[in-house]
Length: 118
Image (tube, rainbow, N blue to C red):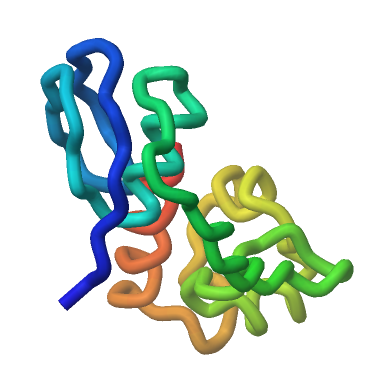
């Protein structure tokens, strides 16, 4: 079970705290470390017990400099080989099936990916 930490909520609030949507009323609360930090940093709460630092999150890997395409972009390597190195270039290319190795199914997958980031 996750350890809980004590904070004093100074004013009622609701919103996305620590990745979850929640609401809090005034008073002493026992909450997760991440939620405590969110409330304190936003000015909604004061620390009652000492709060440890939040653990450092690993940064997401950055795409190699030869391309701005995200690492999980469908058919990324093949697109880069064909000089399509940005989202804009892929979006404006036209019929991706003209590139050897990309068929209708992969074209649909790429289109869905592009819709998800627009």
